[in-house]
Length: 271
Image 1 (cartoon, rainbow, N blue to C red):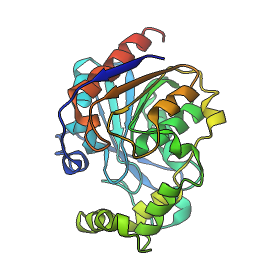
Image 2: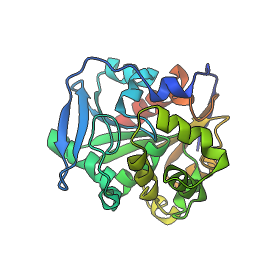
Image 3: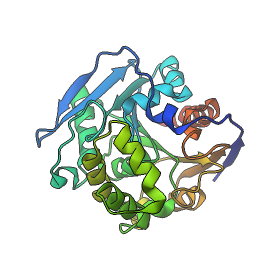
Image 4: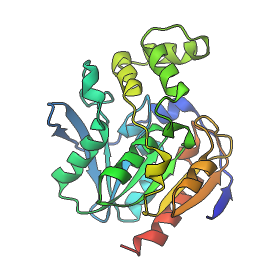
């Protein structure tokens, strides 16, 4: 595996989670369970699906250098508000967040667009869903796992459970400011709780069977979700990269985009 170290400028969580939307006409995909999922498509080239993280929506990608760079490079960029977020429906039935439904929503959008193959790029919680796409959808050619370490492979991940319980009303001193932010920022707290309750995990064994090229990239100061380096060692065909930054700001930078676009250029030629 290759390790790349780059240096970037820092920014803030709020600018990432509350990006300014651009004027693009979106569409809605209707999931088999009736949930409507908002999505947007820009460009006409090879397809790239961007998967956003927790407590945010698809517009957050528009604040990143990567979004602009992908469009300028001629890719078809597909982003969506995952269920429970943004302009998509926010059901309050816990069963409507189970059984890989978020990955299946993404696959349904790809079906609706007639896309035959695509690259999946996730950040933070979006990377957890990207691993599910690698397992479930043969149309994924290669993928980027950003801002995620190895801990999500544990189905009983204590961090996930702690966030679910805090959002459900159980006191958690270390998450008091986070819950207050959710309450004050207009997010649907019940939907966010269910997203944590049913958040999928992918076992190390399953990851070890993924032959696709995978880039695992994180900020040097990002240890929120375990070791990204350890995660990279599980994939048979992984590139490991780091850029200076923490969990909240790395994804926005030009250097993050440079690492990702370099990976894409190298692997697009294989498909």
